[in-house]
Image 1 (cartoon, rainbow, N blue to C red):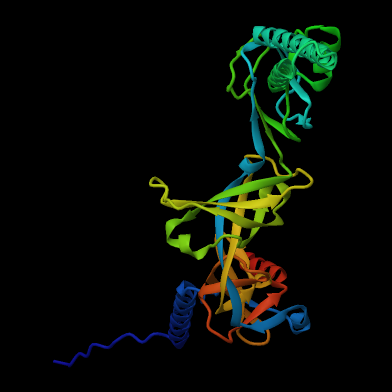
Image 2: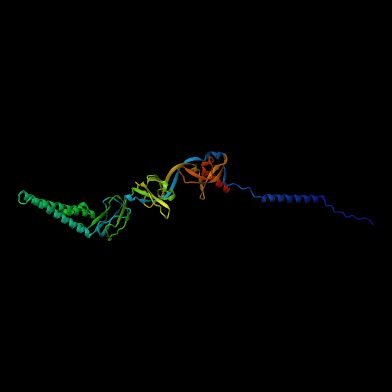
Length: 390
């Protein structure tokens, strides 16, 4: 039998070439997909790179040790100086017939604040008139006795007795006059009463010093009693700034220590005063010690109950610090720009104490001699934000 052989069919060359082309295309596509799947390299948004022509816009300084005065900031408020405050009341029991001053009024010593009608005033005036009459009678009696002694009608002892009676009458008159002044009757009214015998129906409650009426506890028709504080007048040309110092810092202050005072209502204008009082006791609920600072107030800009801050400066120490102009604040945190090279800077978070003059004491975040941007930080931060958005 003849031998048979199986033969593999041969593909044409054109089909083989086409197959290789397709395989190559698939391989290239896979490589592109793999390349597309790889994540883009991360960009450090804290780094800012500037153009060479912009370098002159920024000033660079190195972090260094600086003499820093230890500063304490204590919250406080303005209060009237109690040593320049008077509480004014009536000297006798009576009914208020007129109120002539309101809270906030500026008054002068001797100015009438209210008027009062009182039976005691009438009785005191009658007593004064009786004392005037007794004094006049005693004077005439002495004059007659002198004439009789000269005529050798009576003895010298009778003249002496009448002179003693005159002295007593004059003393009673002075006491009655003083009583009217204590009640509040003016000297002019007392003289009119002496000459004409006309009784005053009302007496004025007057200011005892120049100042501002800061409190009024009286109304028309009210019955006032001696000792009741009806008005409070304070001289606000000098006020107290009262603060509460933490007990751990109680021994860091002393009397007459100079204190700077900041008042938010006045735009944080810096005022100056001296400590006039340091409490010897600690408030048990707040664990603080009360201190007071006296501050002059010639323009009456400081008003009672205004909020203020006491800035207490203690001993000086050498500490790392950065210029306040170098600090950037964002989202409640503080940063500076550290120079990496001539054209690159990194935004670096730092921890700082409150400003002392033009510097912020450094707590954490930088080493000594680190170069930082001290002028132009706002513009540099704007560049960083723009680059971050792009």
